[in-house]
Amino acid sequence: MRMLYHHTLLADARKVRLALGEKRLEFMEQSIEPWRRDDDLLVLNPAGKIPVLVDEDGITVCGANTICEYLDEVYAEPPLLGRTPAARAEARRLADWFDKNFHDEVTRHLAGEKLTRRVSENAAPDSRALRAGRQNIHTHLQYIAWLTERRSWLAGDHVTIADISAAANISLVDYCGDVPWGDHPLAKEWYVRFKSRPCIRPILRDVIDNIPPARIYDDLDF
Amino acid sequence: MRMLYHHTLLADARKVRLALGEKRLEFMEQSIEPWRRDDDLLVLNPAGKIPVLVDEDGITVCGANTICEYLDEVYAEPPLLGRTPAARAEARRLADWFDKNFHDEVTRHLAGEKLTRRVSENAAPDSRALRAGRQNIHTHLQYIAWLTERRSWLAGDHVTIADISAAANISLVDYCGDVPWGDHPLAKEWYVRFKSRPCIRPILRDVIDNIPPARIYDDLDF
Image (cartoon, rainbow over all chains, first blue to last red; front, side):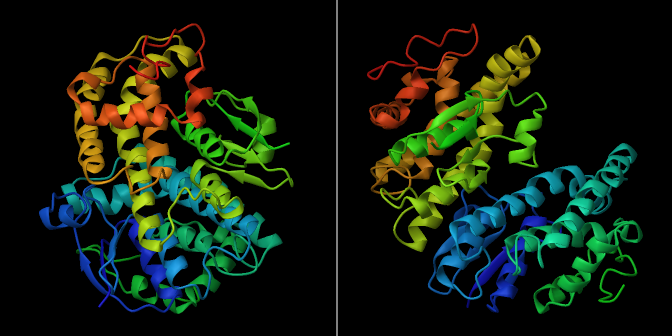
């Protein structure tokens, strides 16, 4: 059986769970705390990082992007990148936007401070980081609105890795109740549609340690 | 004509130049200082980042990995990722290692401090960063040795994006004269072989502002 090593607090690892879900691929899972050294993990991935996927034939694939590219090559339908080189370049560009820009400007400041810091260090969030995250998120939600005014999904007519990267990050911030949905109806409309997809259901059932999610976190029609 | 927007101080941008060189694809180039806002660049890439490639048919591709994946899809020979999903997963894993781990632990501390900081801020390097970079580089050169004892190139029998990512980073550190080649003969043997490839020649002719390269930087048989 396929095995995924991951952790619910990592947006990158959520991204792989969503990609596996969109492909309707079953997998067993093992949660690994990313802030602890894990010698078994080092055997699988010399970089010592999750996510790591061990596929049914024993092939070990390390890192979120590498896993998503691998899944799209081996399990072609439905395609998560797109059907032409230009479409794939657009999906990868936007996935990168959410994996890096959104993550560094928003997810890290909000979920990183309110969830990861509390769980890993039992420490209080840094208030400057929270302020930065709450300020930065608006531009990104406006960008989602701009894109979805022109396309059904972020990178085109179908769900791609761009939507998956965005939802992986936004779901973590939404867990904290820090997405200002009221100010961004078009971004909300996109997330309502994404939340109705079966791939995200397991993630909406996650509970992080003793920190309860915001009321709307698992509400499909918030 | 194909146009690449890049800067010699960015390892990511060197990576794209090497990939274009391996594919024997001609291109015009425009250097853009990554630390300045550039409104023309924002039109091409809303993230405002380089590298950006505008291909001959006008398709705009943003970001080093997205460009390399695009090039390998559109200009298939020679393949820079590998011929099977498992081989491609290994090439992408190792490229990621050098793009992220080597970059953050070594390139940023050495080339980032001695070159980028000087050129962009006219400031002196941080001595703690230099110490960290000089210490961290050994593990990575040992890893290159470990890999090339088992394979011709880092990810297998052929040059892949893994060698390209490694050389993109190492060439910047070598510009500073900070690669302890004497302690790592197997890593040196790999780099001597890579340096003999035509793709790297333009990079070995780069001169960064008024900072001369280390004596061995462009020496093919150092």
